[in-house]
Image 1 (cartoon, helix red, strand yellow):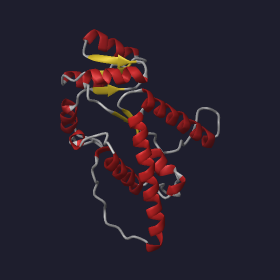
Image 2 (image 1 turned 90 degrees about the vertical axis):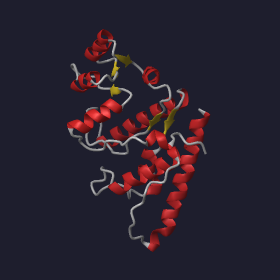
Image 3 (image 1 turned 30 degrees about the vertical axis):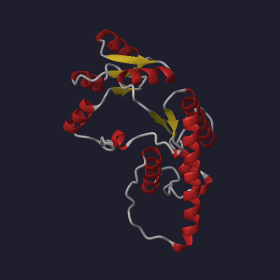
Image 4 (image 1 turned 120 degrees about the vertical axis):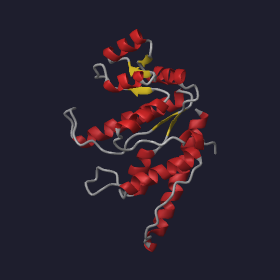
Length: 224
């Protein structure tokens, strides 16, 4: 199976918490560009910081302020669709690959007037369909099934916390382990933990299901 990423693509550390200013500026200076997807920005402080470090900005064209600043400064690009986003990103980094996914975390509330349960299903369905369409229509854009891994019937809800909304640390680790294995051919370290012998058959079944689903997803991505 062809991997989406090489080990070198993952050689940079990913920030998963609040960074101090020194680490933030180091990370920004090492980046190819700053992506600012927000619709609702005035002259964004983080955009100014990126420009001060000589990094281009990719801005959402629906944000008039940043779009205008990109045009006047000649230091950024803007996009108005999925296809334009991919093109602007590749103008900065021609080797860029995009991996899309859908968050498994359900909505806590909805402004639609509908109950949060059908609103969640509608929201996730729309996002999942959009991600699939992009993966099929755009070159080097792929979908990774983190949503399905966490919420699918094979998981039996075991990756959700007691509030049935937040994903547990174990769930996040499982998704990342599968992602690294299938996307980059890397084996993430697994923390040792007690195993319930009665769960062996179930665990083996889940592992087989995830492996099979990811293989199919990767093949679909390659054939798109």
